Length: 369
Image (tube, rainbow, N blue to C red; front, side, top):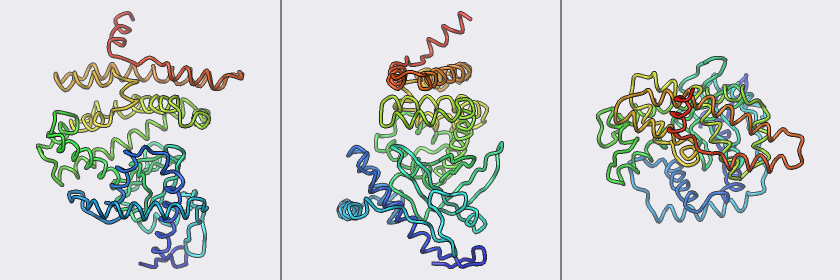
């Protein structure tokens, strides 16, 4: 592995990769038990594919995957209580949770590193090739491609302070799984199939996957820009609130609520003015779970647009949703910040009892306005 000059000292890239990957294994060892067996096995299969550089279109060898999984779980048992390692950069050893200091040395060399916390407060680490760096509205956007180190879960995009990290390798793998599932289900008329049709592709070729990866990358950036705006309106207390209701239905609702606020601020307005049709289809290909349950109006308006070509219902939903989710989020914060011994229980009750925002409710409100 190459030795590269960093601040006058030699960077041993191989050593850096191994250290980051070790931290990835430690994180997986500590948190893999949080996933259901089904989700865990799906993630491990995808992880095996990445680790062994198996092309997306190739079938995985079931026996080898099983043997690898047993070895990996044994490895996790041995390191579960280990501390995370500092990163060797030249003569420096840098805290693995200080990506700003790490990237100050790596970005000029064409690499990007990220560390942050995701679901279950699990640490995520990755090192990849930097393919694009830009600034938007005071926010730094770093886009990576090939990844040299990563953990079991690969979030396609993350926001850390004022930097957005977008991992195109993770985006591409996510899309491939969606397309593969679509093929497996005999190509139903659903959002991912419609996105392919926008590019005159009935099977999901590599060229189309590249195009959709670029579209999904932009969607991810727009969402994170929306998160910036949502954070400005909700304030730092929101993250503190989430920290006090972990692993609960209320936390899932709160995260979905903020996702909707971010998307009504930025993502959906962008997609409504974008000339291509695949963006909206890709957005709704991932519109499921708690997000769909809380905001059925968006799904209904998307279905209307697909059948009629009329964007007005979606535009109304976005405008109404922006005010609704901001008001709902602030009310939740009110319960959290209240000087009340039962404030957390009242917050959980409020979040878990939220009524879904349906299109008929929005139409009724606008008619009465």
